[in-house]
Image (cartoon, rainbow, N blue to C red; front, side, top):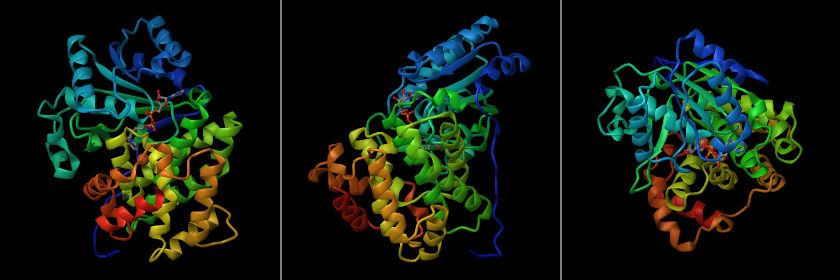
Amino acid sequence: MDFKKIVQYNFPTLIRFGAGSSKELGPYLIKNELFRPLIVTDPNVAQLDFFKEIVKELQNRNISTKIFQDIHKNPVKSDVYRGTEIFDELNRDSVIGIGGGAALDVARAIVLRVHHREDLFIYDDLKGGDVFITNAVPPFITIPTTAGTGSEVGRSAVISDDETHQKKILFSPKLMANIVFADPLLTMQLPPFITAATGMDALTHHMEAFLVNMFHPMCDGIALQGMSLIHESLEKAVNRPDLEVRSKMLIASSMGAVAFQQGLGVVHSLAHPLSSLLDTHHGLANAINIPYGMEFNITGSENKFRQIARVLNLKNESGEGVVRYLFELNEKIHIPGKLSAIGVQPEHIETLSDLALADFAHPNNPKPVSRENFKSLYLKAL
Ligand SMILES: NC(=O)c1ccc[n+]([C@@H]2O[C@H](COP(=O)([O-])OP(=O)(O)OC[C@H]3O[C@@H](n4cnc5c(N)ncnc54)[C@H](O)[C@@H]3O)[C@@H](O)[C@H]2O)c1
Ligand SMILES: [Fe+2]
């Protein structure tokens, strides 16, 4: 860190956290005179009882609800365009995202598009597109239903190109939700596989953020505490869930998105191409890759790995101890140890390596990552 440089620290959104907090949505809308929200979700969540109850409760308060649920598993630009058309046609006054990272990202991208009508990827953060995000945005409320991405407190949306499937980031502080209702009761019925995959995504956010070479002790503190909460609760959340572990996972997930304001690293760059090429769930892709990515990162970050190992209460206070922990945790929560188990074939490796090199996450990795490094990491994980 260059201590002569001035850096900026930002902390997020108003969060109403706790069992039952989603019941505050109706009163919040009325208080803020929002009577025509567009509710953005995904086709699965739209069928769940808690979702139907939220909608019914708004209707009982004479709030006009329109649900947009027609989104891809890894959302694409055309999802955002369709959602915005509905926003316009039905004269909506606000956007509520209810769901996992996919639904929340589409909701946030619609919030952007309502008053920014250039091609969506003009606003691509990697190309400096955030400078074009200058107009007003409609009121935006998020209600997370998975504990993984932390997208509810984020300021970015990950949206893929319809043709290339490459993930793009739309970023602006304007895209932050006005309020988050983080209600662990909504995550009680999350299936074990989704709990495991999304929980490992959150753990990856904390670990990668902590390893970024930046002087950000606030984010570092959050990252360490987030890892500790996940260590205490993920295995139980997968195998024997109760309100306590669901609560800890949900807040740890939001904390992850705060921590990764510092940046992410090699693991996310290994993971993104799997979603682009094979439509792999984001959290699952991170979960399989994290032990290999962290092994790659040990040299040069020994001291930070020692700190991580302490937070995880490991006997072996070293990078090697952390890597072993990650392999064992994956096994306990039934995540496959190898990429071949999710359909990756040797012939995918070259394309995956190209996409990983082009990915936005690894420039913040503590160690530079070359195409050769990506290739050998994929081959190791295969
Ligand atoms: N904006 C960000 O900062 C950020 C960060 C990381 C990832 N992402 C993006 O988030 C997406 C992944 O999000 P995710 O991991 O939350 O997965 P997801 O949104 O794809 O949800 C996973 C599955 O869980 C189901 N589901 C959601 N809530 C449920 C509930 N309460 N009960 C039962 N089933 C439920 C969904 O219908 C879906 O089938 C990816 O597109 C990724 O690129 C965004
Ligand atoms: Fe992630």
